[in-house]
Image 1 (cartoon, rainbow, N blue to C red):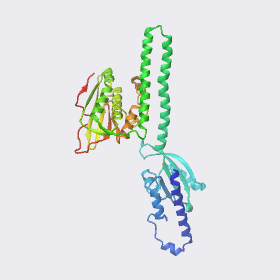
Image 2: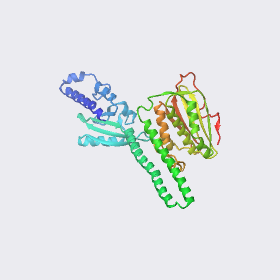
Image 3: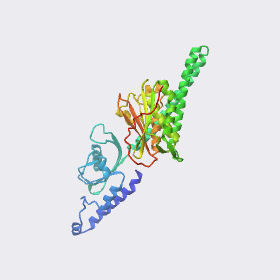
Image 4: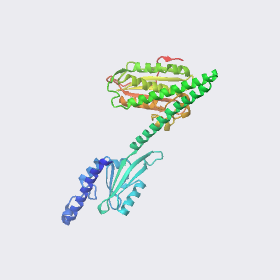
Length: 393
């Protein structure tokens, strides 16, 4: 926000100079001056300046009509039919007119007239000008505030998630020492300690993976990666887990596709998608992974037959530590970082992660990446089709 104020001050000085010149020019000269296309005496330079600003900027006349507003103000719905729309903004403007002082306030406004349209956080500054005019500057702070919240949540969740298995291990070790003469209790507590140790190991490894992805040189040594090898290795890593859950993992799709990137990171991403699918699938069900070319992109889709996700869960499923069903995550050992890692891997490779889901109908998570091979023809192959060999438990 600090960066826009020199430009705003320059605009205000331009307006002031214009008003002074109007006062000294003879009446006849003013009558002969060409009228502004937008009315209200707004100069061309001022209009161009307002259009160039990233902030949403509005210039109002003494009657509250909008003399000039840049495209951003219209796109956010602050202006309609030359009037300021949000009631909260109009209230702040009225306060500025009443006391003649500039006011700054944070406002949370709806994104649109429909319910459930979401909200925008604006840092709003309203300043009085001469001749009853008012300047309104609004900066969208939604993304910055969300990033701050995500960071705070990440720190809090890491602390909590690490404390849980560490505390459990400490408690179990004390209990085990007290039950040294009871072989059955020793076996039971030892099994619990193994589960907590695996959970702690997985959590630490995923935090390390996530930290690595946030380094600016994560993909400095990109190479040509065969997706056949990536998918085969990822399926092999989850084979034991699939057999223990009595779930079939089927691998299929197109062969011979390549991308540029890091083979280990891509294998981790596909394995995380398979891990997620296994955790949300019932015994004797099927998890499929398919690879398909889509023009100049390649799609790696993992399909499960689980409980599915609601629209609200789909919006947050790639967030760090987000778990739609915390109770199920505790039972299955999920850390809430796997899908976040998938999203980061996709972004670092110039791609994206997608999800399709419907409650009761399972989910399809897709890793979309730029194809290394030059495109020739668009593929019509369904990425969810998995007609290849299956890993049968």
